[in-house]
Image 1 (cartoon, rainbow, N blue to C red):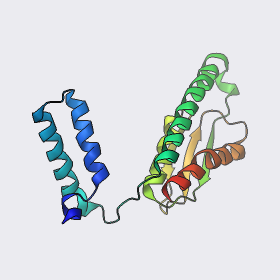
Image 2 (cartoon, rainbow, N blue to C red):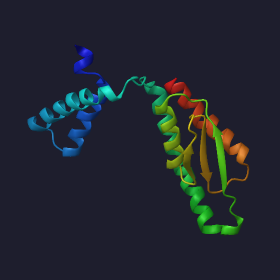
Image 3 (cartoon, rainbow, N blue to C red):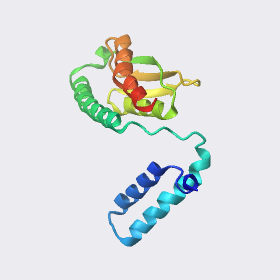
Image 4 (cartoon, rainbow, N blue to C red):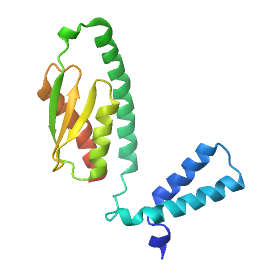
Length: 163
């Protein structure tokens, strides 16, 4: 009975909190609607989630988020420098093929999103079998080193969080 009422408790809580934040009020009506959304949406979408995603390790996820925010700030400065002080002819844009060890779709999605959020790189495609990610880098002096950096900096941490 508990699994049917709350198939995804974390999603229920997240939906309720987001609803309260979106309405920007904490009234009885807002709380009732938050509870209704938190119960109904996960119950209706549960059949579309045949394999429940694992719950990430919260401490490691928090440290990953801090790392990504730091990398976004640093990459913004680098891209600004490239745009302001380098000519188009001197840019070394590259397509990087990143072989993936990640297996879960959630971890692969977060990796692709992290790469896209970081200025100067964008995730372009995922292989049909989910084993390689195609990434475009605005400026890459050493493509092999950039692939190693993405695998070590992001993929390794995501593997520890989700698998």
